[in-house]
Image (cartoon, rainbow, N blue to C red):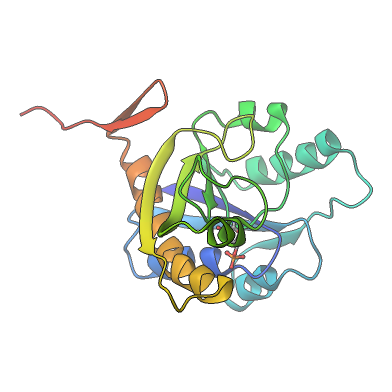
Length: 204
Ligand code: GRF
């Protein structure tokens, strides 16, 4: 059984999609061991409580990064987490945190990386005038929105779009992409060659 740890700061719709897929058996041999927010008022924490999951708030305000990260890592270890999923977690992880879970931390970003890293990626893409947008699930390394790509999904940008309708269309794909990426990682049938995640096919 794989223990997932979810880190979030807000609404929690990606977490909720993962939770639904776990409950429906679409992420086999996995359970959500703990959901942690750095914000007291995160909607995702309400969802976690409603679903009867372990939900913790570990406030980040007023703490330095490494101090907060130590508290979060201690909670993840206490719940025996083996895969950490950042789902709208608005904090950059310290190098120390990343080193505690090598190739075991995933993040979702609402653009086709390496385009539009950072905040408000959907708005950045819309304002730039791209015709194709999308989302990326990637391993977390020590740089922002940077590690090896696991899954990407594209959506068209339509003439009638505004930044909100585009963001909604991307979010639908995020909810599909994250569980797909978790399954890739948990199945373990891949190598990371340079930046490239390459699926391996079992011989025989
Ligand atoms: C998503 O757009 C995700 O890609 C980004 O933050 C947003 C979180 O939304 N990293 P939610 O809290 O999962 O609804």
